[in-house]
Amino acid sequence: MTESKSMILGCAGKSLTREEINFYRNECPWAFILFARNIGETEQIRDLVAEMRDCIGRPDALVFIDQEGGRVQRLRPPLAPNYPAGGALGALWRDDHDAGARAAWLMARLHAFDLLRYGITADCLPVLDVPIEGASDVIGARAYGKEPRPVIELGRAAAEGLMSGGVLPVMKHIPGHGRALADTHFELPTVNASLSDLQRHDFAPFRELNHLPMAMTAHVVYSAIDPKNPATTSGKVIDEIIRREIGFDGLLMSDDTSMKALSGDFPTKAASILAAGCDLVLHCNGVFEEMAGIASRTTGLEGKSLERAKRALTYIRKHDAAEETEIRAEFATYFDAVA
Image (tube, rainbow, N blue to C red; front, side, top):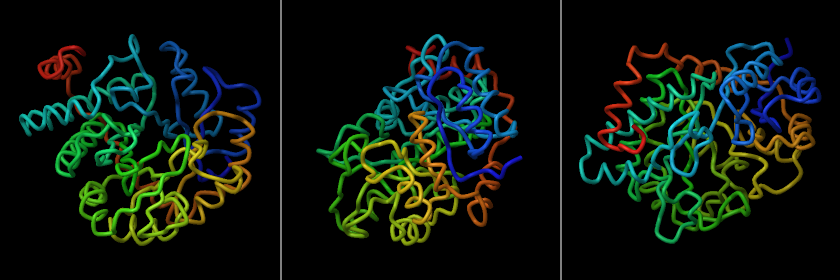
């Protein structure tokens, strides 16, 4: 079996092409990610996930998805219910802290039921960004609140709910996307807040939850730290802020390299991300030529990155004995639309 490379890749459609199969076998990504374009019906999803793992000879390879609730939810009815966005959980928390935290745990536990049914083992959740007034709505209602405290409490509950169900959480977007005035899918935002404001407001949820196994970077420039490079490609942000200030020593993956916030061709993006200190390069849109460019400059997973990857997998628990029907019924006492 080929050594796993430091990358997570998507695919173009609902089944793998011969070209994709040969590419994955030769390049051996560490993990895969699914998007709405890859989602059809139950057996098709299961077959696609199994085919991905078979290509690289690792039946335990992680398969990621963005299943937050609200507008960012790849599995939809009838495959999974439509869930509320993080902001709705935050509104509940403001009225009753215990109820909000319980609902966040329940919803994440339900995500785990939904995802494992199709063989999906990692969810890019919780969103730990803390938006400010006037920020781009790319985060918006996805956030649990506009202050650190609800984000910390609900993010912790969501992560625990996923892990209780045997699914790995990925906190995003470290060290904080909440001040970005532009959508990183289309352009690169620069945040001009002082370091002290960032420490107090933006970094706080990540610092509190720095024990979680995985995190995804923000394609955002923080001028007080590194005025030239976004966090994803900034050795200074990753070393001084993410690793030391925040204290996160888990597995660090980039946000999607096919987003327009990052400049340069795909080989350059991959090399810059790894040189800055990210453990994994993420590419999501399934465009074959772009994936080939990523693979051309992506190295084997080794050293501390390999240690972090192995440690992350130990967070996958044998899921608890909770009854899905009971959890759905309890969640429906908070949000009856998804009973």
